[in-house]
Image 1: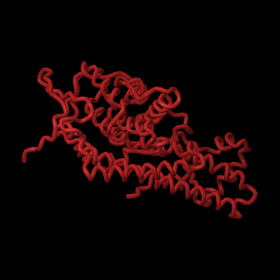
Image 2 (image 1 turned 180 degrees about the vertical axis):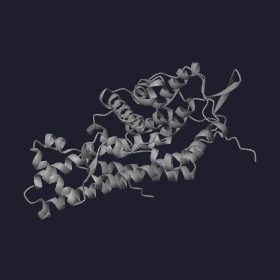
Image 3 (image 1 turned 30 degrees about the horizontal axis):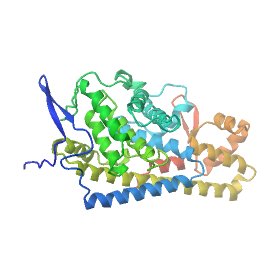
Length: 379
């Protein structure tokens, strides 16, 4: 059955035996993006879910504690889409060990640094979302581990092929990225949530780097939603839905190039934002409930009589760093080693914390109840 071409979204050029694709600049034209009833309904649902997530973020007593876990969650999911697999425990264990993290764990840590750098440039240094931020994020992402051979912070200098897509030649990239930067920062007739979806597909089609394009493209979604005030903190992880429906993700992206089907991509994208926001909200709600339950238990249980203050201090530290050692707890709290040890032993007996051995043979303590929520599958 012949595919119906909805609109022309770019042109093809020859380079030797290859025919590469150059996307038209945004927004979609001839015709413009059609806001169907389905898109309008999904837009309302996604916006509502983002609003709920923002409201939850405002309720948590210490946002910084939750940010770390959520940023790492997105880093894990986004990296997993590219075949880079590690675990929350391995990432959180790294600061307690003196050994060099394995390659995949390092790449996930790189993602968190890339996002931190980009947010700092955006919010504290006042830069608009631009090539400067994108290049810096890529430099951080690819600076250590397997990525350091992929020209960190530099647009690719060679032609590549990605599945069926042959993206623009290297000499086209700078101009295409300049056009994309202009589109990101100019006024729009479309809602900013839809604009972020269009920018993502355009970035992935340009494929400006040798490696790391998918992770930077998904990081760009979080940056844009923050920049436009749609989320207050980077506690949304869009890769949750992209990974869960990865085949449809690539098919929807490809459908823009082959069929001009921006509408199909936007429907998929709005679903991803809605479901990712709902998942993040549910997780934050359970974390909030866990904190309240544990605080109540410490206050009421005879097991913590005489050490309630220390127990509360340890729990607060565990929410920020859910894998730790007695030495670290003692230092952070300003308490003697034995005081920290007796209190953590009680938390182990209550099955809130569990003991394990790190890669270097050190005894570490894992905040099991917290990890259970972070790892939980809600649907």
